[in-house]
Length: 121
Image (cartoon, rainbow, N blue to C red):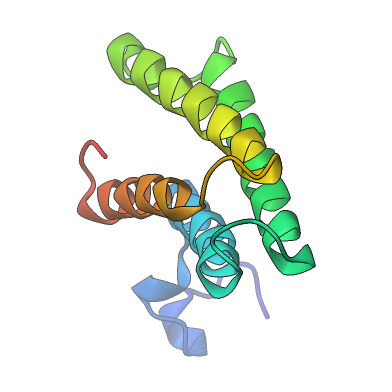
């Protein structure tokens, strides 16, 4: 393909362009699906893996939010960092047998909704 040929001339529409928001939505969606398909009490190997993946996700999101170049408004970053801390603590509680994944699923679904609407989660 010639680098100067437009995407639409090669059968790619505008939907072929993916944004960072789309990528974030997809990752959160995959992790949420793992949580939803596993034992909500955290007792199975699948559930442990799903909670671990969720903890990894929120750790990465928190690290990104803490980067000096993150362009989100400060109040939104602070709120999301607080949410990340809660999600991580709750994930550890689930792994310790002291909670369910229901809250983690609700948090992720709320973030996904915010990403799709283009507004605050």
